[in-house]
Length: 96
Image 1 (tube, helix red, strand yellow):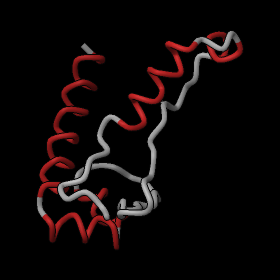
Image 2: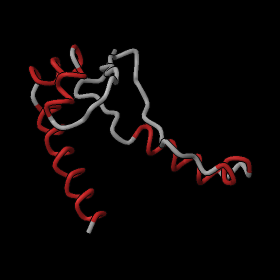
Image 3: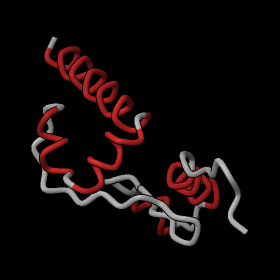
């Protein structure tokens, strides 16, 4: 039951963050004051938020890396990591 509660909480937090990200004003507020905005959705953090620009993209990588696959030069693992890092990167308008 504990795992189910955690999953539900994660989904609720994810939904709240998704709503923030979808709203330009709320998203800007998140970038300028992440600690306050994250606290409002139940996340205690001193995280810094950086918005992507046409010439700068911030990647998100998994917190835990499979060291065995990494040291084995597992190409499929590198592909998985790349997809995880770039999976949500997109432009509404392509930069020139």
